[in-house]
Each structure stands twice: as structure tokens, then as C-alpha cells.
Image (tube, rainbow, N blue to C red; front, side):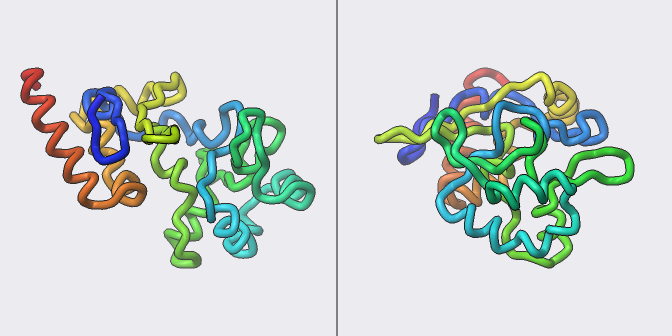
Length: 193
């Protein structure tokens, strides 16, 4: 583990390779899982604000879930998460012509229709953050769904923290990320990589 401010960063975030390969996984991380995407304070309101913008991109089943319970719910672990359809798809999923699952919120952002990118937990994936009373744990979540991303990352020599520069800066700030880069460089040099 590496400590930066009040965070403990798993060495996997520095050592492991990762580069999303949507052509292989088809966005499976937005479909599979035990519950919806974890939400931070204020993100429910952001999702409610963007809802009219993305409404036409959502499936009829997703619209019915949102009408019934809203954009989020509290899961079995007590976390506020995005609502899901039939125990799997996030309500904000949409599919392109080749069947790749995409995020309707991110699509609206890229089209300039909203200033909210998407929930930070989605942006940070495959990193998961667990908050404890005295610190935040920053861990790499290894999942079979992302095997192609690990292989592509290794081929292209892109490490998890490098792939996730933008969302890590979004979550923790430029100074924090600069400290992470410095620690990573030193750690990998010590390992002879």
C-alpha cells in the first residue's frame, strides 16, 4: 500500500495493466454485478437533473423502474446505488447498433447536453474506493468481465493508474495524482520495471 494524504492506494493500482476494450467486453460492467453503481453525495440530484435529457435513450423497462423507485436505491450493503433493471442493467444503459452497452449520461455529456459526466464510481472503474472513518482505500477490482482490458493494457503497457488519470484527478485532485505518479515511478523503478 502507498499512502497519499488520507488515502491508502493498493499496489495493484500501480502494478497492474488495464485499457478498456469495448470491442471485446461490450460494456458488460454496466450490466453485470450485484447492484447498481455506487453513488456519492449529490450524484442522485445530478442524475435526476439529467433524466429529462437522457429519457429517450433509456429502455422502456428502465423508464418503468425509474417511475416506480427513482434513479437510485439503497442496496443490501446499505449503499446508495443506481437503480437496475431485472437485477442487472443499470437504468442509464443504452445500446449502440453493434450491441455495445453505453452510458446514456456519458453520451449526453459527450454531445454537450449536460455538464455531468457520469457517477464518479463508473468513471473510476476498475478502481473501487471504500471509505473508512480515518482513510479511503483505493483498490483495483479484478473481474473476469475485464480480462480483455487487462490483456490490452499489458500489450500497450498502460497501467491502471495511467488509464484512470482523468477520473482519479476528478476524485482526488491534480496534486494527489501527481503524488501518485511520483510514488508509482519510484515503486516501479525499485522493482526494476
